[in-house]
Length: 381
Ligand code: AMP
Image (cartoon, rainbow, N blue to C red; front, side, top):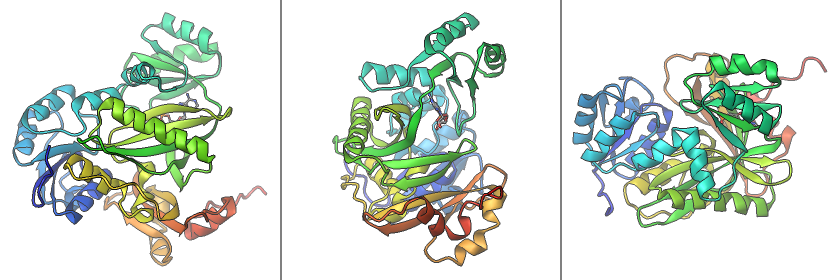
């Protein structure tokens, strides 16, 4: 694909915050974002050039959307196989449907990693109750049972501590098949954002260290506090995955740093990723611009980081109650997603704090830097 000229229309499937931030990046490069969404006033629609309202399996809406755009990308991967085929028959789609299908299905994802020599946690596909017994024998307790499709933010999974947990987990986790995974005693969780364009140029951002709360990403630190050698290995894994997939676009690769210092890939997401939001204030070209550049055929600059960074998600009504305080704290670089209703557990925005290169603070410093968003003091101590 040649470089799309400014004024062209970038079609984005999905109307959430990732689409919003991609649309803003597209506008900066002179493109117009056209959003396919079910929400007329959602985060992406609010900042877009145009919107097609419709469900992701509504073929009529998909046709109208494709007819109005020059190239199609995603901010949301759970579009049906049929819908993907239809879009791909009408316009260039990046990343390709085959990549979305791999990332939508944990069995396909882990099989792909195995075929390409990418390390993952030990795993077994579980189609029947007998498969689950066999998986338990091989993996030992505790282990994790996950749905194959549509899991996110820690939903659709259960920790299995003993044989007494098997029946309930097997019956409640739906749909089947499931995936049983060995429990990794990880030292930390990290991720790498990697972009690749059609010419095969690849850019990987620095490794991010991620901390979750209630199954949702809470804080990301960049760079991850791991050895330079391990960081180089993590970036190399991300590059290998992007190349093996033939990626055109952006991909988030989540990994565990095992207690023995080895890396294991947990999952991939072929779109901008929450753990890459720090790049918006710590990199000259952030993950959203890199995404837009990759799918519109622009050259990819190196993913340079000019600052160290901490990103904290703003989740639900409790964090949003602090918005006036955040606005009154100039070093908190805030990003609001424009969602009307702050429901518990809902991602409403994020803040970044940047530090001169090499001066990412330790625990207390991170907390102090977050000001009004610092973790509440432990009332028991
Ligand atoms: P996932 O839905 O696969 O991203 O998992 C959500 C979270 O559950 C991860 O970020 C980890 O904190 C934890 N987790 C998932 N799989 C494993 C595993 N095999 N071993 C240990 N922790 C895991």
